[in-house]
Image (cartoon, rainbow, N blue to C red; front, side, top):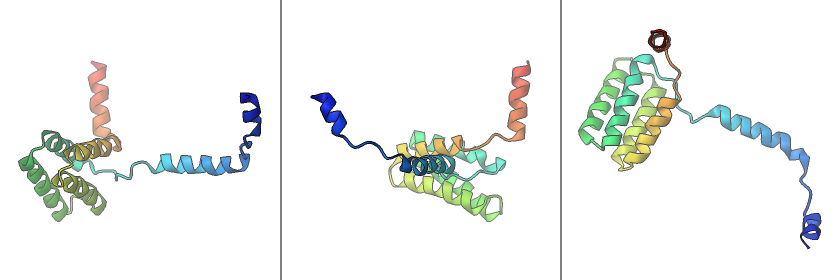
Length: 126
């Protein structure tokens, strides 16, 4: 009975496979959409994540002030600012765990700087 049921199912149409493959590649290449952060602003990701994991409003305020200061002084691009502020808004809305997760995704989307790579190499050379 099972064999007859399987034979009656329509066979997959291979014409859609290239489109599916292209969609998967584009989805993976697009990533999570976080901008590459300037090295001087990378510590904000870590600090913001700590504030979110501790659910500490004072630390969140301090991070927001640092983000605003960096933007005002021209040390933060608009795309960085928007990514940081989206996380701040999420935490202020009460979704601390979601904001912490967003910090982790933001952090994981970054590439190490030459200085960080040199420090790691020096550490492992000992």
